[in-house]
Amino acid sequence: MKITQVVCQILRAGPAEAKTSSCQDLVLVRVRTDTGLEGVGEADSSPEVVKAVVDAPFSHNVACGLRELLLGENPLETERLWQKMYRGSMYFGRTSVTVSAMGAIDMALWDLKGKHFGEPIHRLLGGKRHDQIPAYASILFGQDRSETRDIGQRWVEAGYRAVKFGWEPMGQSEALDIELVRGAREGVGEDATVLVDAGCVWEARTALARARSFADYRIGWLEEPLQQSDVEGYAWLRDRSPVSIAAGEGECGRDAFRPLIDQRALDVYQVDLARNGFTEAAYIKNRVEEIGARLCNHCYTSSINVAAGLHWLSTWRDAFLFEDCVEESPIRSEVTTETIQARDGMLTVPDGPGLGVTVNEDFVRTALVAESGA
Image (cartoon, rainbow, N blue to C red; front, side, top):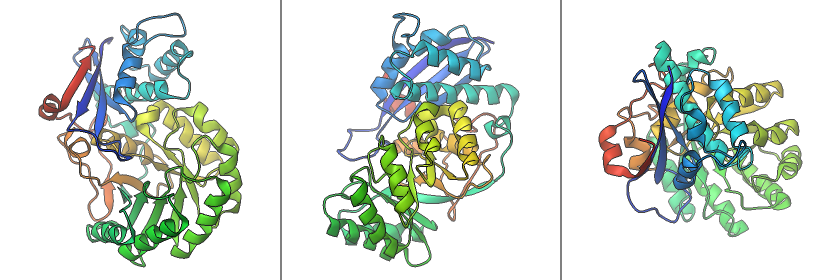
């Protein structure tokens, strides 16, 4: 079996809004073979930049577009192909968008491998330990305490026992920050879990002050209070914070995660399969297990990524929460024919071959704005 095509498709369901939400557009990567099998993956990044990484022609031995590195290869050799892509893009890759493009291809290769063997990816990864995983509703903050309270109430009434509120307008003032978290707690009630995603808005001492204030509202974790690259700041904060510190969603590959893991900088390591793929995510999972920290997925894109995260996280013994984006978006809900959303606060791990989801070709046709490699 040989790879004959690596197709990039950029999808948009409408004009993008000025908000921190990556379910407004999508880049699909489809790996096709001479046997007729196809695997699909996605990257959570700028779609046009990912497409350029895949499309780029040969420049020299360590600066080559990913498609050219893969054509004619056996798609089942996922570890070797990861290393080939890494080496062949070394001059413009290693920890950035190139690795997220590699992650999308790797996701597609594992989907293809599962279809070839007639097995779900979680079995190829060694076997799932959970049929279902508790989900948290992931949504942006309201503009104030009242809006945030209403958002929390809505998703608890929908069956979620945990809700995460994220990004703007947090970081404008101490008073507003505290009011937002107060509204979140009021909305979900006393029994549900409140998670706070600050969106990289503070330096370490301010983040520590906020962590101490937010502890009064019994938050489950404080996510990305610092800039993503501030590893030493995270280690300093984690040692002093009264609440758990979570981060990692923006990291691409083991080289990006290694400093965070080596310095035990986090309580919760958040891994996005659409930025890492299964090959790197399996390595990261093993490393996090070694240091006794916790793992969670990151996911704010389509059901393809939801399925990937479920396969991966279900293989971890201590899986405790799964990020379930509840923002209303066609990209989130219509890219696959299957709808993967929590019921009564729980997500079910797919058991079909590969990812266990099917691309909705009708939606792709209506949302397609650019394509290459077909």
